[in-house]
Image (cartoon, rainbow, N blue to C red):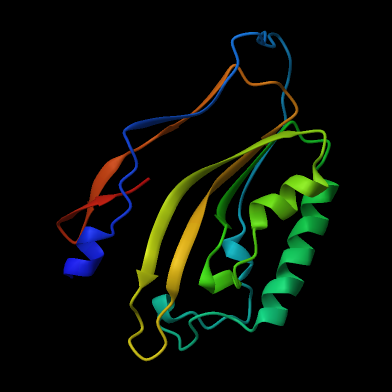
Length: 168
């Protein structure tokens, strides 16, 4: 409990990810958007995840690679959508075999601006005890066709089981 408390990721209330005072806003247009929780390329239909009462901590590395390839193929088909918002995008996490998923997705969307706002960052998740999840660094990825004036990550403090936590 002490380890988890000391290593709990608590981002500042407001984090400026990007600022550009030279851009101009786009008005009077219709925009397309997709929001997708990619589940760190590990939560596919046959994953028996331990947090959901199953037995698996993470899938085999080949499954994560195949899932990531399928995710990238689907996202590439969305390249005409103005805003692509993704949840559970890993960067240097044991559960996804340390694949930089944000970089891989950024590489297939070269005409979009992209950002990653970290919302889950711990050096070690100690459960399950016999096969711990380990290091997790994950976040919310945003990709846009438009130049941003500013990109800011806002933190929303909350509680988990009555204990202070960041429900970012």
